[in-house]
Length: 104
Image (cartoon, rainbow, N blue to C red; front, side, top):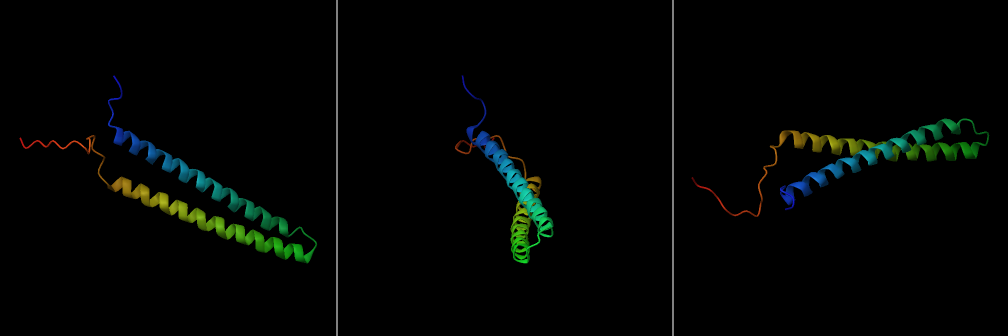
């Protein structure tokens, strides 16, 4: 009874799957704040008070800068992992704690 899959392989696949989910969620969050910063920048031009205009423009530019930097970093990391995974050989379905070797 029980699972026939090697435990280390299932753990690897699940952690790899959740890593991609996490990266996609972080990328979507960075996109949200990037678009929020752009909309805040556009809304700043509708303000009548010069002090509020300047403060809103600087705040929106900071939001845009930080979210764009994070977005580029997340996409770059996902690209590198995808490229590394594509170029590496597939994981063998063996148990790393199995010390038996066949010399035949």
